[in-house]
Each structure stands twice: as structure tokens, then as C-alpha cells.
Image (cartoon, rainbow, N blue to C red; front, side, top):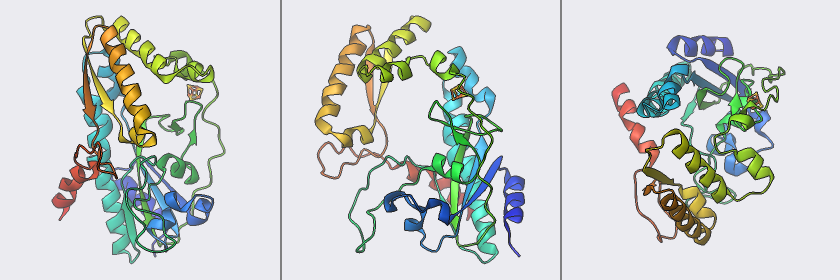
Amino acid sequence: MLNAEKIKEFAKQTGADLIGIANIERFKDIPAQHNPASIFPEAKSIIVIGRRITRGSLRGVEEGTQFQLYSIYGYDWLENRFLAMITFKVAEFLEDNRSEAVPLPNLPPQIPPMGIATRDNQPKPNVMLDFDDAAVRAGLGEIGFCGVLLTPEFGPRQRFQMILTDAELEPNPILKEKICDKCMECVKHCPTDAFRKEVKKINRIEIGMVGIGRGKQFFPRMNAIRFWLDIQSYYRVPSVFIEKLEKAMQIISDFDCNAMPTLFNRWHTVDGVHDWGGIYGIHRSRWFIETLS
Ligand code: SF4
């Protein structure tokens, strides 16, 4: 008989570092637009699976000598290959044991709906879940003062995916132990001093300016900046986005740097204005599903 212990054991054998289970009742207060039950109405349990970001993956960035290894081993491959394989294997394990399992990649919950509701009284597609919040509800950690999910095992260094299942499983207890001790080291070491400036209501553009100044201080020969443009910011108020983009370009040029504005994937606008195409991030993960078949 399938139970929580067997699933946890299988996930660990498959390479998971963390696994927590919440029952669906713990998500009752979440609006339909972000609720797991909107994706799988029969879901009874939410399984959150984590894999650590190794400490060494951050070293090249800290030294200012290797910026690619983190984006591959700390982010893209870690989440979209290594962790996704574990998630899919656990989903197969559940379905081999007569339960239904919905595997979910960790996409930003801030992505707004992009379509119309397919039935009355349903949220619009796509329903996006907050994985850090789910990890807390599954007893794996807490949100620290810095706003990032912390676990007792790895602090802020892990990535998560999720499975919704109709299997009724024993949930983890909610973590009672405090992880964040309010030491304020994150405030002290923030390279842009963002927290203090937000408290003082200093404009985000000025915060960015301090950031570029710091970059120049540590890497004096820095002469070009890749400037990522996020569709979620654009969606909020397009005219404000364009105005701030122009200001930011001016600041970059005031620091004697060239700017490379770069569009994140998923630059698809609902109104067709400013729609520059791009590949949806999730499509890039298809290769591993193909390799499993
Ligand atoms: S206050 Fe200290 S423990 Fe809490 S998130 Fe910041 S650095 Fe981490």
C-alpha cells in the first residue's frame, strides 16, 4: 500500500534532497487563480520536492571570474533537468501505484493570466502556484527576512518542483523551528542596499544606480550591461515601464557603459502591441520528457 514514507524513500533514492507533503486543506485560503485545486480538483496531497544548489556553484560569480556555471548548475540544468527528472520519476511511481500525479515546474506565480476562462466559474489560464509558499505549507522551511525561502538543511540554496496527487498521504508537520534569526546580515551585505532604500521609499531606479556604481567599483573595466526586460513589469503599466526603461538606459550610459536590452522568454502580450515573440520557457524542457519515452 502506497504511503508517504514509501514516496519519500523513492524520491530520496532518485536524488531528491528535500521532500515535504501538505494536504489540500492547507491551501484553502488561497484564491482560485493560485490554488492547486484549480489545476487538479481531486488533489488530496501536494508533494514538494527540492534539490540543493551546491555551495560551489556560487563561487565563480563571487570571484567575478566565471558567470556561466551558476546559471547552468545552479539554475537551468539543476531545475529543468536534474530536478525535473526526479519530479517526473516520482510522478511515474505514483501512477504505477494507482494514483494520479500532476507534475509541475516552478514558474513565477506573478505571471498574470493570459487567456479566457474555459468554463464558467473557473480561473483564467494559466493558474500559477507559489512554490516557496507551498514548501512552507509542506513543512520544509520558512520565508526569511530577506524574502527568500530558507530550509534548515540548505538555508536559501535549493530549487523546488511539485506534484499534485489524489493519493491521501500523511502530511509533514509545519516547521516550528525558527531558521531566520533576524541577524540582518542580508541587509548589511545587500550590494544595492535595497532594503533600507525601500523602507525610505527611495525610487527603484536610484537603487539600480547604486547597483551599477557598485559593479563599477568591483569590476572597474565593466563597460557593458545586459539589461533583462521582464514581461511581468511591462504588464503592470506599459507606459511606466517604457518611461523607466528610458531612464535606466540613461543611467547606464552615464556610467560609461553600453546597454544590451534583452527580452526574457515569454514576451507575449495579450493585446499584440509590443509582442516580440520568444519561446515559452517550459518548451525548452521538452527534451528530457522525450529522453524518458
Ligand atoms: S536576517 Fe539573517 S537569517 Fe534572516 S534572512 Fe537575513 S541573513 Fe538570513
